[in-house]
Length: 149
Image 1 (cartoon, rainbow, N blue to C red):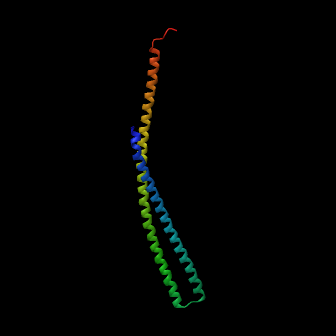
Image 2: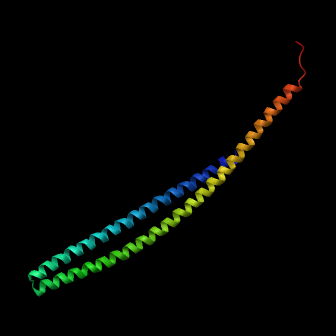
C-alpha cells in the first residue's frame, strides 16, 4: 500500500478531531452570546425599573416604597455584576476552546500537507514509470527485425 493511503486514516482522525473542536468552539461562542444577551436583559430591566422609580418619586412616594425600589435596584446591580463575571468565565472557556480548535486545525492541515506531498511523489513516480514503459515499448519496436513483406 502506498504511503498516502496508509496516512489517510491518520488524516481522517485529525480532521474528525478538528471538526469536534470546531463544534465545541461554536458552542462556547453561542454560550458567550447567550450570557451577553442575559446581561443586556438585566441592564434593560434595571433601566426600566430606574425610570419607574424616577417617575413615581417625582409624583411622590412613601419612604418604605422608596427603600423597596432602592433595595431592588441594588439587587439588580448585584445580578448585573454577577452576570458580568459569568461572561468573563464563559469568554475564558471560549478562548480556550478556540485555541484548542486552532491547534487541531494546524495539526490536521500539517497531516494533509504530508499526505499531499506523498501523493505528488507517488504521481511523479507513476508518471516516470509510464514514461519508462513507453520508452521501452518504442525502443523494442524499433529494435525488432523487420519482416520482409
